[in-house]
Image (tube, rainbow, N blue to C red; front, side, top):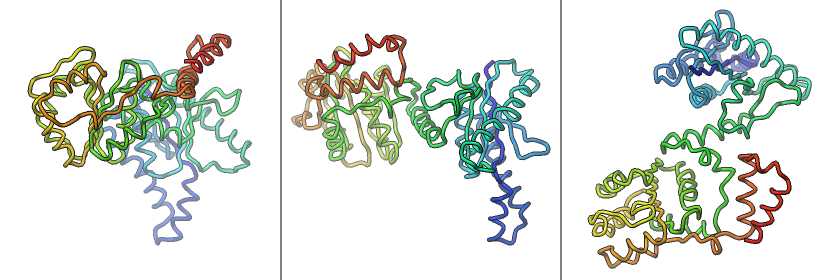
Length: 378
């Protein structure tokens, strides 16, 4: 079985405790212990929620070792510990071993993190920046843990000869934010994880947002591979700051229909319905043809945002068959390759794909140059 070990140690607690003690009547040692307690309290809660399998505290030091079964849970546990707002040295290791021998076999990995990886980084930082005591949180990966990452783009070796990898705290928090969003919408697709870097907005993106803001609903219509779904996911991410995001994919069309029929659970949500009238051919129950008008009226009155994507042919069939007089095209934005994307857009999409995913074919400089030039001529 796969296990991830997260080593957590304090940085500069003594100095911070002394500074905090000046403003209170509490002894320095009590304040220092409160720092440790705040971390352990969070770890206990993580174990209760089964995000981590277990943890253990050093008998003589301030350090902890956390055991979990996935890199995502390792990230979540680190994110929770960072909320203690304390400077920490964090190292992530990986171990493939049966549960029975986890603690015993983990000692070597823990020792590597504690006595080699973390001290090596501290020494590098102090040489590089002239700091006698590193007091800024840092996060490191052993090579084994690094290889388990779905996306390695945010990580790098802190110096060429390093035998470990690091990630800046702000980059870690960006990654965590996207992972939390994807967990909420029930998706772990790699291209969605990289949406902040990959997404290139179509020229009519502002129009999409304007209609959504004004009417609480927008239909994004276009042919296949025009960026409808990616644009909808990007909108979900943007609006997730103030709304609860919900994604109902086209594979769950019956769930979509039922959700729309009930139309009582829209409040404080941003919801994406993917191809609710069929992905390729028109398919919908009669009730939606008669109820779409009342549904739109309900949506306009509620605090919500509804995003619907559809292929143009399917949407036109739905619009033709609907049993209301209201013109749905006032809520529609069409994505078309020539009108929605400039040559610069298309080149940027290709370049971002190459930079993020580093496909093998991109190593061929001649082929890479040819494709980038071809995208300019599209």
